Image 1 (cartoon, rainbow, N blue to C red):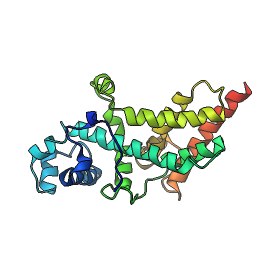
Image 2 (image 1 turned 30 degrees about the vertical axis):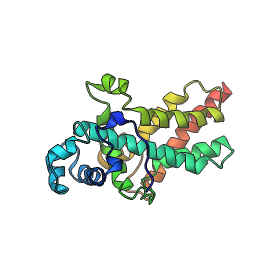
Image 3 (image 1 turned 30 degrees about the horizontal axis):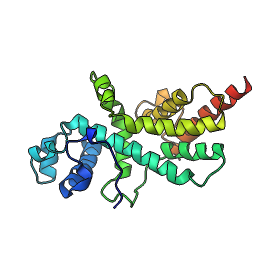
Length: 227
């Protein structure tokens, strides 16, 4: 089984290296997806995996740190997918489209990571990811490097955008905007439909999100090149 390397600042003990750690990750994804982050607790998780809260605390300081870990894992996996799918491509525009498609699509099961339900984790990213940084301790968490996965992914895609138009002055701002849009737009379509033209009643919700994001990115890059 493949593992993605994450900083030890996310955890007290690396859950990827033990059977119990693997159970904590796979079952927490399932439970947060089903219950929502607010209703999820370590006590409920311990009951689910026939373990103790104390055992879970040996891996994660609290449930907020666990959520940060799960979201960071998702962004790291997304960077891994984009690198894999673009490393043979030469055309920057084609590479950028592949990267944008990856972040907009609903995740599918990846057999390289057998203990992770990427589809459920994607739904957690859509519903819960902003809770990792919309907190009072965001600056402290940032100093600890807890948003490194998100920033690395943004940097990776921004570098491709810069290849498309080296003169564009806002590649990181543009890509961080579309990273947010890639999960905000499907959430709005499902729950706050007046905030978006993405229509949950039409076939291909994620294709609609991709069309919006692709239009936004390339319009910005091409407009800048004409100034």
